[in-house]
Structure formats: structure tokens, C-alpha cells
Length: 475
Image (tube, rainbow, N blue to C red; front, side, top):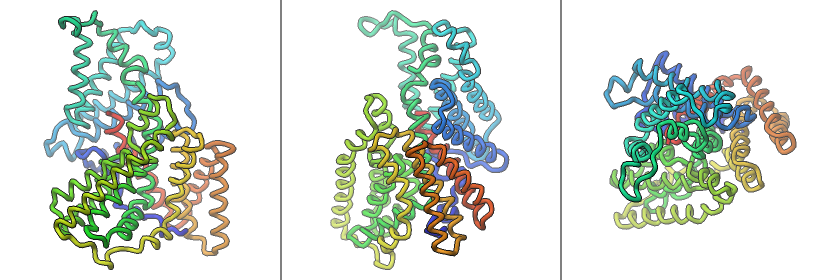
């Protein structure tokens, strides 16, 4: 295993803080504004990692801070409208709204004891803070996801406020603003319900896990495998899109992320070989959306299902295997038929890499994914499994930078054996020894040639992970 087998940041597509964000209309900032957003996104990811590793806060406070970070970043990076001047910089009122939203997220932490003592009897300040949070959340959802979801939520909110005036069975006895705000904001049944719990624990970690693997070079491996296995077949480019998107779905669980990572390569490839742009886009969109049901890392709904039904996430994974296989078989068959109808040939052999060579060079990238699957099926929680998968990916990235400077094969083997032994200690001692290995590797990486580039890749992975989580978390 050498440093060359891990994707260089430049080869991975220059993953800066604005690249591959799930929200397609995020601002592309520069200068001090860009630095501020990067710091906020980095702090968000570090916060989530601390929560996953040590759980230092109560459940409600953890959820409140999670929502506070989400709102902070949404207001700073997603414009309220589409004027060109708002695409390149953040206006002063969005800086203010983001800061205010984060401050409101701190309210549950600062006044935790007081809120518990006066549970069921909110003060005027509680209601003002709760109302402001609800309004800011509605606007953040509109910016990130469009009008549909906020409108549906607004209809039910209005029903709670004015439903007593409706006739017959549609009416209810009426609820005061204090009851509605208390239900939505002061407990774990409204804004901070099960979906927020899942977002603050499982989903964020798995998004971060996928981003780390992308930066490590997993996209390059998936594309090489897909090109080598089906590229030369009839209609090869479209089959490459289906297979590559399916493989990408195993680590991302996000249709939009799949399109942004795989589609930028496969859509031009399909159009160049005779598919219409509409069909090429449809193939990539269809194949990418299947990533939400492709085990082991599925979409947010899978985690919410597991939490709501109170069943192990591994059971959801097992139930999804056959539907996912049928989904991708159907997509693969349809592009095969379309290629036959239009008499489209495959790619030239010289454009199709040897899949076994690619697998031989980069097989180690699958180790974190294999460990994740093993842990899920052996009784570990998704949160702990996700944290371990993420930690192992970081060890691979850092270790590769150091191993590349060890010329002696035996010493390099001993080095990787030591890293593996330290990582395996989690079975007996939990996450602490694994974090110790990562800290040691970070310190060593500072003193090797190219090590700072590797650390920059890790930093960008944390930043991109936070930005990928915005639409999912807000929804």
C-alpha cells in the first residue's frame, strides 16, 4: 500500500468548501467569507464527532445544537433568492440571521436546568425563542428545499392554531400559541423529534464516512471497476453509469451526491457515444437515486425507519438487499434495450481499464466499508459502526502518507500491522485507542513530505461532510 494508491486532493476534484454540495445553489464565496464558512463547517463536523465518540451532552441539548449549526450554515451559504449578487457573497442580514439562529440553538444548553425545572410552564422568553426558531427553520427549509415542504408544514401549523373554527369532524378544541410552541420547541416531539435525533447521530456520521471515502479515491476505484467490467459491452457508457452509481450508493446514501460525483463523468460519456442528453440525464438520475436503498449506507429514511420501528439497522439493510438488486437490474436492462434499439456500441478497449488491476491497487479502500458491514451485523450500533468506519478511513489516509516515505518493505509491513493492531483495540477498549492512533498519525504526518496535503484532504472532507448534511438535516 503506497501513498500513490490514495487519491491526491488535486486528483479527487479539488474538493474545496463549495464543491459537491447537495444544495445545488449554494454560494461560491471567497476571502474572509469563505474562511468563516469553512471554520463553521469544520466546527460542525468536529462537534458531531465529539458527540459520537463521547456523548457529553443530554439528548435534547445535542439535538438543539445540531439544528443550530444547520441553520447557521444554511443562512451563510444558501441565498434567499437567485439574484447574481447574492451568489458570490453573503449579505449582512444573512450573517446576522445565521448567528442569531446558532445563538437560539444554544438556548437549550445555557438554560437546560431552568427549562427542566419549569417544564410545562414556559416563560415569555421561552415562547419568543421558540417562535423565532420555528420561523428561522421554515425559512431555512424554503432556501434549501423549495416551497413544498414549508407549505405543507405551515398548513398543519395553521390547523393547530385555527382548527377550532372548522366545521364537523375537522375541528378540534383549540390550542394556544404557548401549547404549540411548547410542543414544537421545548420537547423531543416537534423540531427535536426522532428525525432530528437520527440526523444528529447516524446520518451525519454516514455522510461524513462517504465523503472521506470519496476523498480517499473510492470514486476513482468505482469508475475503473465499472469501465472495466461493462464499458466494452453494448451501450457500455450507460451501463457504466448504472454500475458506478450503484457502487457509489453503497457509501453515500444520497441521490444528489451520486449525480454530482458520478454524473459529471458518466453523462458526458453517454452523450458522446450516441445517447440523447435527456436519456443520459435520466439514466444517471435514476441510477443515482437508487443509492438511497443500496446497502450498507442508505438514505436518511432507512435510519428513521430503524429508529421509529425500534428494529436494528442491520435488519433494514437485509430487507433492502433484494429491492436494491432488482432496482439496478431493471435500470441496467432498460439501458441495454435502448442501446440495442439505437445500435449503440461499447467503449473502445483502450478506454477501459483493467478492473482487476484497479482492484489490486486500491482494494484497501474497501476495508472501512467491510468493517462497517461486519459491525452492523454483529450487534454494534450504527453510530459506533459509523464512527469506526470513519476512523479507519482516516487511518488509511494518514498511514498512506507516512508509509510512502518508508522504503523498506518489512518496516512498511510492521507499520501497517501496528496501525491495524491499534485500530483493532476498539473490540476491547472502545473508540479511545483508535482516536489515539489517529492523533499519533496526525503528529507524524506533519513531519513527512506531502503530509500537509493529506491533512488538508482530511480538513476538506470534514468541511464537505458538513455541507452535504445541510439539505438532509433541514428536511
